[in-house]
Image (tube, rainbow, N blue to C red):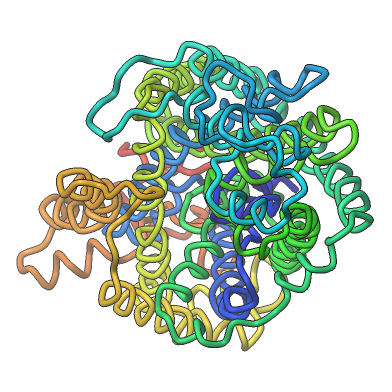
Length: 595
């Protein structure tokens, strides 16, 4: 079985749970509701969809050619995520290399880039580098007030040294050469691990998917033994019921589930297409979904135990040090690591874990794009030269990621993160679910799954696919639009033109669906619009299992009678003949060819 590695939870989107579990229980309740009624059912649908047809996110839409735009929308989403996600990995590489020192560079305020407002937390004598009188270290009240107003050395290291952050999204400034170099390293590593497709990436994922659990466990044992860890864990587990009714919380939970499980990226369909036809993908979907989300919850204990220690050290509430987005992965958590003994070791482990988890996701993204391109072109040259396609996609991703390494790069990264891969994911999943259940037909799809697995999907999944999941997604989208708030970064308010670009990125994936539907209607035969619509939505003649041995029942090919039979039986389509074609995943596929 080959499956896409577990996705990072929404937050920084840099690790599987290591930075995503930054919410209170007010978020966890909607999170588990979305997991049960949307995440697991749609995860199972995508796995079964790709496994049945042995095709990538474009080839599977032989089930209903008019909706092939859903596959193109998935490719667009994967392209956006692949561009900015590797930039996040490159920043993790940068911090990993910076941790190879006796003293972490963001531990103190005695560096050239620090400002007079900088105040460290390691000891009283280093709480400020210039403005603090010598008589104040013993004054706890003053220390507390100063801590609440301070600028941490980790924040200044992130903002003034690593990013050299500009004052506006339109002010790109210079390209940060250290980040550019790390971006090149990231893409080289991804390409080398995918040089032989899933054969090579599958072996690498065994390490990238298991070793982070070792690091998480080490950090967990260290975190819970720290003073104040219980305070952080209680903050993590304490419900905030007043926020349950906010649509944004439910929308964030939906985006988190879709992002964390990889729904609507196309990666699940692509990786499942490499499975054996009778593989029990139902069992896989349950195990992987629950394991993924359990890891996020487990990582929450790791995160908040150390943040509780940090809050106890500062004498402030946990909410003062808890953060989300890049602020957690590259500001709050690195600062907390400086408080631990042998802090460079823990920093190395933490960022190495982020790198491994990020690479695992990036493998899946790149393989999704490459497989879709190869399957769509499907000529002999591109099948034999798939490595060159992988190289071309990697080079294009590197070039498109260069602007994100500029001084305004973080603004664009967050813009892409919040718009290009947020509500468009749930829209794509909803349309995919509706097209399969109501256009192709739920009975047909249930029979396909029974032919593949030996049993139909359980009643719970049938109900979720047909009614519950689409309804939940629809209402969340409506209320998210009603309670929409423009994106901000710290105190920076994005200008209107940047928000407009964000909406265009979000729409660029969704717009593929109606545009391709119109294109398919125009090229489909039929005397009336209704007839064209009917012909454009019915399955192609080559829809079904890829291998002849699995084509049974209504997918059984027409076998012409032998001359000895003395019978003349006309084939269903006398102007067509079926010849086998080997696809990018090595399975024999059928393609219609005119005689």
